[in-house]
Each structure stands twice: as structure tokens, then as C-alpha cells.
Image 1 (tube, rainbow, N blue to C red):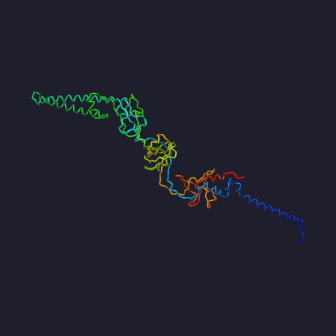
Image 2 (image 1 turned 90 degrees about the vertical axis):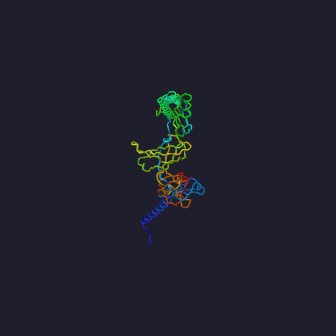
Length: 404
């Protein structure tokens, strides 16, 4: 074979150099496409987070103790609406106790916060109306006694034929019957003030009036307000009332809901109430009234519920969060709330696995939440293995600094 010309030798050498550069570049690119070592956390676990694949974490046997794995399941989510409102007394069971007549308070019998029974005396007043009625009673009793004696005398004289005319006997009979009617009317007038028949008989016998008008509690309950001191002048319906009594075992919840959601609410729907004062406690009740009018400024409707409070723990004015079940439960794909993690970019994620050793984060879309369960609208299928507790632990591994 003939020797190559100088120009041909230079061309061959150039081809060899270009081929060597291409091979070196291919080797470099193949090695640079795996950043696992750069992102691996400290410990025995490893993590991968490529822009072309979902983040993946591999756990060691000891790290597996930090999580819990279970299949994606289903859960019956109740359809609920939430609102913020206030606690108040049940106004149907809360009474301002005014006297039936005006007068001056003589004495009070119970203090604020005391439990009272129906018809238990709360206070007494000195009533001019009662004094007048009792004075009329004593006068009517005296007149009845006098006319009764006159009738007896007339009958005696007429029977013994001592010259008493028939007309005089008839007049004595009429006077006695008139006096008897007046006495009955006077007794009824005093009975209206709450006096008993025995007390009335005592006043007639002693010819002395009793000016104390007793004001009693109209219901069983607790004294929630007191503004009664001896010497205060009180009138019927003129606030403030001397006493207020309420049945505290049943409270009202008043919540304002958006006008657009008012159609979801109906009488009798169950209500769950939570307050800041009793974290974790749930008070049960039901919707008792939906108000007819809509606030023209806020376009909200007031929903009233009756809340059972047997221990009298809720206080009027308390802020409360009300959850009202507005429809039957919806069966849906779900996982435990501890299996859902919110990433820094705002997306929601869950960690899935097929071998219980290597875990891949998957972006999911969530819906309803209830009783520690989260509805999965997209991203998971029932039966897939998912981290049900410890999802945050896996996400933190991706953020851990690389090991030395």
C-alpha cells in the first residue's frame, strides 16, 4: 500500500479527534442525568427529585417505622355548611319578671345565678293598688257582717209578730244579699294579687291589710339578671325588669349564612357547635327557625338552632362555629388527613408505593374533609398503597441537605 499524502494524514487525524470528543461528551451527559446523590438526605434513605419525573424517596428499614401504609379506601362524607354565629338564651324560655302592678320593692328573696322553681317568690312590693283592694275587702266584710245582723234581727221581730212590717224584712234581706255580693267581689279582687283564701280570712278577722304583693317566678330556671333593691319603684313593662329568669339547659345559636346558600337549610337539620372556650367539645342541636328577611347590606340570612346545654356551659354572646349537615352522605375515594401534605408551591400531594420501600409523590386534588378523612377528587385510585400517616416526614426528606 502506498503511503498517504500529507494532506490525507491531517484529515484522518482530525476525524479521530472529533470522534474522541463526541464519545467523551456522551459519557459526561449520561453521568450528569442522575442527581440522586446530590439530593439524598442524611441517613440510609435516598431521594430523587428530577424535573422530568415525580419525586421519589427510598426508606431504610428503620425509617419505615416513621410512617404508616394502607390502601386507598372510601368514606361517606356528609354534606355540610359552616357558619360563625353567637350563643344566646332561648327567648321562649327566658322571662323578664315584672310585677303585675306598680309599687316599691320591699324585699328580695333570691340572688343572681340562683336556681328557682316555678311559682317560687322572687321579691315583694308595696302596691297602692293592693292596699286599695284590701281596704275595699275589709269594708265589704264589715258591711256584710252588719247587714247579716240586721237581717237576723228583722227576721226575729217578724217571726214574733212585734209589728215589723213585711217591707222592712224584705229590705233587710236585699241589703244583706247586696253586701254578700260585694264581699265576694272584694275577695276576688284581692285574689288577683296572689293572696290566698286563708290570707284573706286573716285580714278580715284582724281588720288589718297586708301591703306586700309577692312576685313569683313564672318558670323553672336560673336567675340570669337582677336589678331589684329595697326601695326601688317598679312598674309593669317598664325596663329594666327587677329579675330575669331563663331555662339555661337549652340555648339558641344565631348564625348568618350567605343568601346564596339559604336554600340548603331546612328545619330539623342536625347542627354541631364548637366554641373557643371548649376546644374539641361538640354541642349538638338542630335548626329550629329560618328567618324570613334578608339583610339588605350583607345579603345574609339568619339561621336559628336550638342547642342542648345540660351543664349550662355555653354563655350568651360566645362566638361559635356551627356546622350544619344539609344533605345525606356522599361515598367518595378518601385517605386519612395525615396522608396529605401541602407543598411549598401550594399543591397537595400524597405518597404512593408498590413495594413498601420506594415512595413516589403524586399531585392530588382534594375535596371534603370530615372526621380525619380527606376526599380525593383526582390523583389516586382506590386500592393503591398510600402513606396514611407520615407524609410530611417523606416531604421533609426531599428538603433535607445532602449528606457529606
